[in-house]
Length: 460
Ligand code: ATP
Image 1 (tube, rainbow, N blue to C red):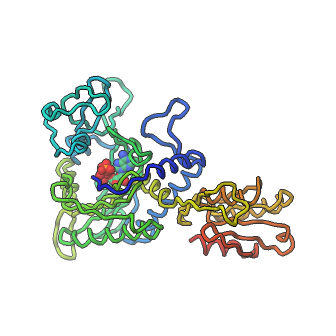
Image 2: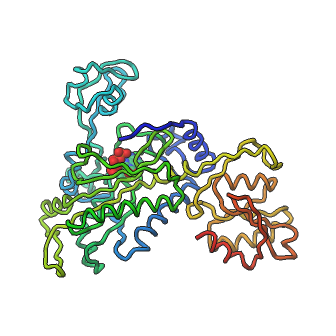
Image 3: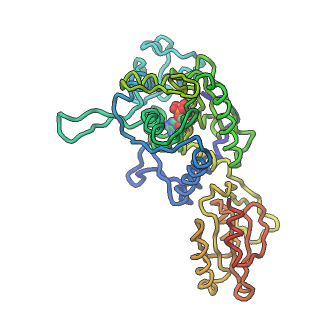
């Protein structure tokens, strides 16, 4: 679901090109011609993505007494997907072109024609809709399940059909009792997990926005039914604060409440956290009040008692669940777009080669490289390298001695490195280095002996 906002395809192209050139994100299996909608994170991308996950984990688990972490399997008992409703209902309606064989989401084609959802098998021929690419006749509307199937077991004829998980949430629900009993938690409490999920999307696209293999960061908060509304509101505030604290442009972050007819089968109420992406305003994360759907379904299908016995109020009940369900890759792409800044360097800056320089104004906690150590001359390499070896013990650092110092600053600006330390000839005697701040470009002289404290304070 999306609201049309201003589009900016150029910005998207710039990010895709920067991501490849500087080693953030590559097309997967590129030397074999690529594989559609799978991407690989390069040296800087893996740092950035890890930092996104680290900040989420810190905010959602580390700093909370009432949320526990989990890392459950990607492959799970196939009955889980029956209980969750995915086997029957995790489908998108599709049509194929009989002529060019292209596949389309039926809802997208209807929306483009200004028509309401109508997924009866013959609806496309009735509406007279043909292939938007070649004008060919379209097939009947069919439901397509988005789960990837695979086989468990080695012996032919005795293998079981199982699925790659399409979301991490189910691993949390089926571990509700395990975590409750092993952690001494009481309601209300939550379980958080980050991990891969797989969906055979019919129309993936927009770079890493919609992929077939991606990562989710999900937290499921178990509450007394009477308190569900309160916690639903609470988690919306918490998630808003997380994005804003990490520097997301407030004017581009929107919270959109779902209408009653838009709600998923499991949801009592839902809010999408949306960002004004260059292609459209789209979902970053969903926050849902799932009611008792999940635990009561797993109780029914597993035969296990998943109710909660509250001794304080002498009541046994099935907890309601409030979930925050975000995409790691979508958040990472959003942070890149949000940080991308072009500055005009024509006047005053002699070192700048181009008229337009790029600064990635990432929050320092997200920046892949925190500090670059730059000797002013190669003659200072020995001392500068010793400093680099020391600094890298405490944070991700880079060492660069090639090219003019201005060019080296630009290289670091383009990947979002917050601090450059320049080791010059005076450093040999006064034991100080010049620290340049990425955003203000201000330079200050700091004693080498005080660097670690200085950086610790600045980077946290
Ligand atoms: P969409 O409507 O965009 O398909 P969804 O409502 O199906 O998303 P959820 O099932 O709520 O998404 O998943 C939670 C989060 O997981 C999404 O907000 C998104 O950040 C991420 N996500 C879902 N599908 C994909 C995908 N194919 N590629 C990348 N991230 C995804």
